[in-house]
Length: 147
Picture 1 (tube, rainbow, N blue to C red):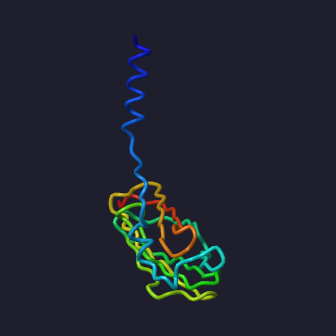
Picture 2 (tube, rainbow, N blue to C red; picture 1 turned 90 degrees about the vertical axis):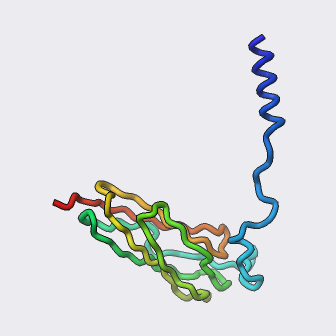
Picture 3 (cartoon, rainbow, N blue to C red; picture 1 turned 30 degrees about the horizontal axis):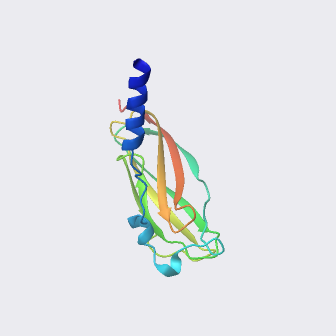
C-alpha cells in the first residue's frame, strides 16, 4: 500500500512539473546591439588583471574602495550591460563606453563595512556581450570592531 501511494505521488509530481526555462532571450541578452552580439568566431574577452584580491583590514563603519581593471582580449568590442554584487554592502561603477579590442576598462567597487565585523568574501558579476555573459571578480577583507 505504501509503495503504491509513493508511486502515485511520484508520478503526480513528475506530471505536474513544468519547464521553467525561458524560450526567449533574457532582457540582458536582448539589450545587446546586433553589431555587438558575439559569435564563436568574433567575441570579446574580459580578462582581469587581478580577478581575486585581498583588501586587508578595515574598521567597522569605514568604506573601502577598489578598482578591478580588465582588458578586452577578444576581437569584438566589449560592452558591460550590468554589474551585480553578492551583497547590498557593495556598490559599483563601471566603464559605460564600449571597450574596443586591446583596450582597458574598469569596475570600481565601494564596500560599506557597517555591521560586517569578521571575515568577508564578496563577488561581483559583470554581465557583458561575452561568451558566457557572466564575468566574475571577488574580494576578501577583514572588518575589525571599531573600539
